Length: 118
Image 1 (spheres, rainbow, N blue to C red):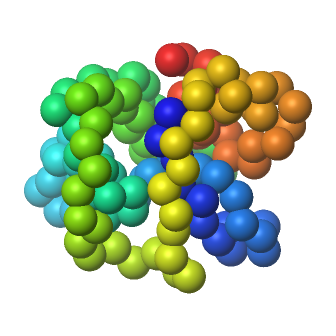
Image 2 (cartoon, helix red, strand yellow):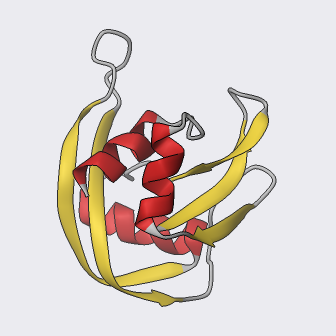
């Protein structure tokens, strides 16, 4: 599983998360996912399949999320991006990430959701 290690401003610490970002005007969710994957993780996928979409906290935010699972992953040059303090791409076995989620060592609900769904 490819993740990014980045500074998490809301928590004031570094942590692991999914590559992610916003969808530009008139941009389709899959195109945004491919762009963000390249910008944040320096990765490209041959195939991206929708995994889940919805609102994470509908009582507090209208932030709509599209999760994808990719295959045929290859490294590419990072281009663009607006990450604070930089990011580092991390490749971990899925079982190790599952264990981290179970042990409470993952702060992001989206990462935990993605791991459960995969």
